[in-house]
Image 1 (cartoon, one colour):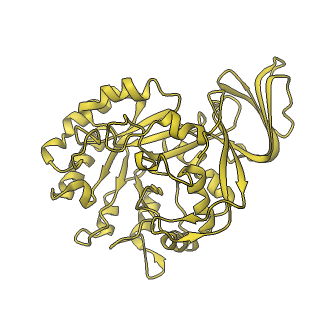
Image 2 (tube, one colour):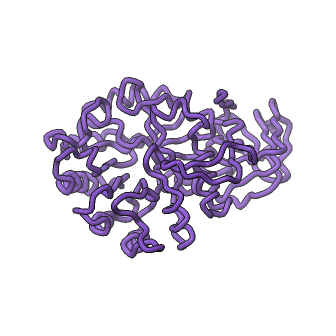
Image 3 (spheres, helix red, strand yellow):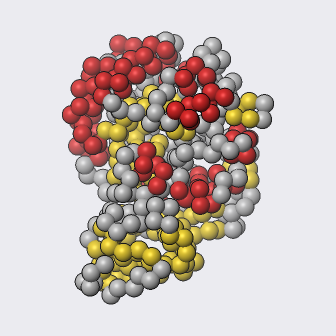
Length: 381
């Protein structure tokens, strides 16, 4: 870095960044909203210096599946209050808005937020803005309106969100919903964030996976139901083929979509997730212990994922999936100054899956967040 003072220097007992190869004691220097230096020998004069000798410093965590939205909407939670202070600086909305409410969402949620929010747009015109089943009426699944909205949404719209589970389709034909959504994706060149229909067996999961393309993301990947990506102690062939085509597999924990048995089987079989996400929405706001990215990642570590792979899958991997490599998910000089400070708590509450099955072993917990150079602290649980 040049010889000007930094605005902020953060030192930590461990600085980790898979993009730059950092993994050890060190510091990151910030000027304005940019990282200007990172590594073991960073020690410039600074307006403010913070020292976290017993913590790990990561790039700001990136959540590929969450629900930042107005509190009056079906799943809406406040990203700046409920998520950002706990280490997640970037999040992807899973279909909260559709074409009919996109302008309102952009003006009232994305633009004023401190957190960085991207949208996986719903092909249903209302998205999840009310209590209707999102795909319960095919007349509301408007391909042309979805395409038009994406074309004017610019960088704010990453892709398209679709969930063909029975609670979302409510009796409509899930294959027709998928057909219209894929048409919109092909016309715009955008990826899908896809929730499969696994609660019933009339549409084989293998057929659904075959429809996904390079860059599409299957969320809820470690869910157990009538169908799963694991069977007879191994990951199914269709999932392996999808991964070979470039389909990504995401956790999407939520209230119903993380099972330790599925996770442990898949990881032991050499099939870890590509990205770790929370599916954080309104019902999680008052959870105790708090449902957040650090705790969700800790569950994957308890299921057998090596720690450095877990760190990568909440930082660099989702940053790449969002097309933002080099800007987020990294501590490289020139990147946005987004960071998460986590401390290991060996005495944390047991880690539980959605069925109440628990694993011991401690938990990473958020201590501080830096978003574009501003330091934030989590509110007490």
